[in-house]
Length: 433
Ligand code: GLU
Image (cartoon, rainbow, N blue to C red):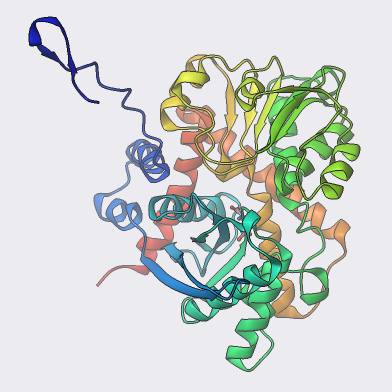
């Protein structure tokens, strides 16, 4: 209700809701604008980069197990191919919509530039609830998506990868379907594949490992001792659980973890190895977990922990709860977990945020290693992958850090500035007719 009747039949309009946007694309644009101004980006390049290059929306009819047909919506948004073929995951979720995928695609462009890998950015998604679908249904849906996008994706065009609720299994189906369509084995069309099908060592743990490396770099700058620090981690999928494991191994006490079924707090430290075992034996969820007291996801975000790692979905920290965040350092394992409105509040509170486009770039970095290995047909051992990925993450962190120091801006704005400068150079070098 926008207006309320009060005594005397006078109508009043309540104060407008906070202008904070939870639309990820608007959140992206808000930061993009600030960064563009700071680097003095010319209007032409600004206009090219503010909207995606191409947007594909497809209808995917799939035969469900009960014999009925269901039509799903599938997206692939190519934000930019300025620096190379576009790159980015495919997510399966009921939240998937055009603006979300557009934002995620743009974030991939910035992420690849910061990681210094020769790709543009893209993202895909299917609006579906994978938790309510059988393996057979998911396979048919994935194959239908591959067929629908066969002219969009390609080794030198656009290379998908896993994202929320997709993994090596889905990538294997895509390789198989795409290879059949092409009439030749084409593993380089996606990354994040199983090891037996051209996947890379180190890809599974790449994002979480990168989040950890970025957090360690930040801790050095903030003079925080890992062995005396605590962490709260939101999300216990691939990124959250592996980040938690690396934190624990480095002596950081992980006092809280969560997933969509709840959050758990144990001030003495949760045994992450056991939590992962529990989740694996429990259909992928932490439901019924005993190592800690149950708290809400909201409480987890405002716990008294030194490090907060949101590794779940978008818009978790907004203006209203940002004021209650107590962490000294936030490292964004997820894409877009903090709104642009909340950024300001966190900055005022002097909380350092390692932004998504920097913090979770370890995943796409090892995707790049996978893609190059597919092209060579020669594969590196895990030690080599870890070494190169860690070096890349450390370098990216310090590039952004220097930018932040030089321009006296947040790490988020510095990351956008760094990325924009790089992408703009490529776009300008290509020219326009
Ligand atoms: N979905 C991951 C991301 O958001 C990985 C993308 C990729 O490896 O291409 O960064």
